[in-house]
Amino acid sequence: MNKNIQDKSKALNQWILDQEIVKEYQRYETLVQNNQELKALEEELKHLQRQIVQAKHRQEDCQEIIQEYQMKKGF
Image (cartoon, rainbow, N blue to C red; front, side):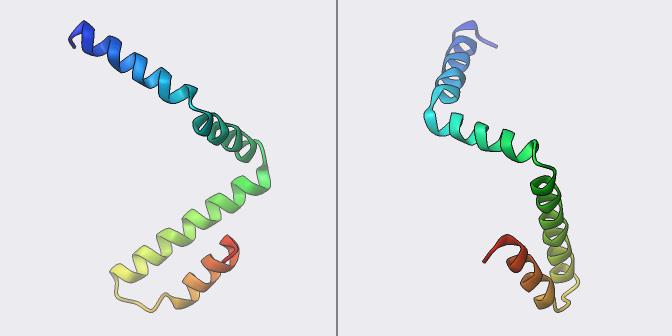
């Protein structure tokens, strides 16, 4: 890769990482990753998402799964 492009890429990446919104996201991500209950809920939500996609792919009724997902997500 061109050295100039590589240097600009690194500078852009560092600028992004220095943004307050990114730092805030990283703090929340750390909190979630260190909380077993939240990690378990996140995995459960991902599992339900996969079930919904699979059911829709098979053209099956997935309304109950969607309702469970929304309930767990807090809608």
